[in-house]
Length: 76
Image (cartoon, rainbow, N blue to C red; front, top):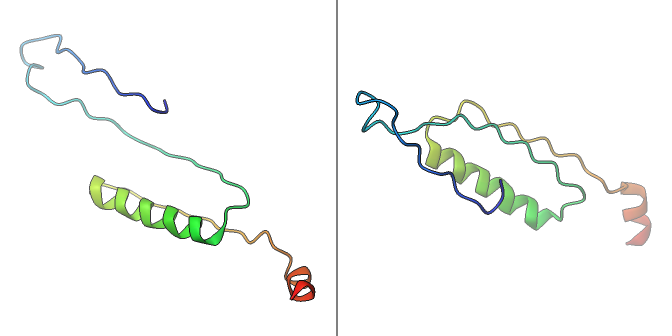
């Protein structure tokens, strides 16, 4: 869901009343040909998310270069 909100859950019993709803979150994002400055912003944002959540089990970031070093050297 992008741009939406989760509806509050109504307790079904007296013992459930007052308990906070909890969620597990697994996030997968694949972005192609991202500029270096945007990559830095994304990594900083993911670090901030980990700080906010506190209970982060793991964070994995895989970055692959898409530029051909030979063509970059020729262009320079």
